[in-house]
Image (tube, rainbow, N blue to C red; front, side, top):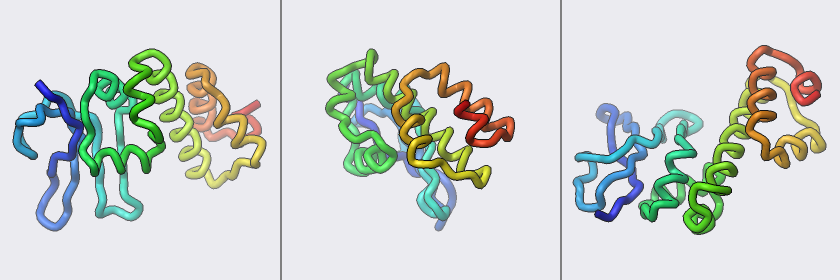
Length: 152
């Protein structure tokens, strides 16, 4: 069975919402799928993308082939080299994918609070690979602390 990562159309007329799914490549576009991996809402401004990074990395490591649209969507969300993820498998690729996702969440929480990171603070966050540290920073950001208190 050949697995592909592709978009499944949902939503209503004139307001599409696409589900990112892992499906048998022989199944119809909106038909049977193996696992739901996320959502893509292109109509909202800005477009909303929710992806379960760990599961996408898992399926890529198992040899799933993303469609052209999914490939472009993943690259736009920060998954630069899908071939490297596929080669690394679940080990380092999973850790990097989870850390990347947590960093993205932290950046969005800080921006939502109206704060801005200095160049040094942004570099510290981008270089952090420890999921526990990122979780701590996210908890601090959710509690409404300032950027200095979050990274302190």
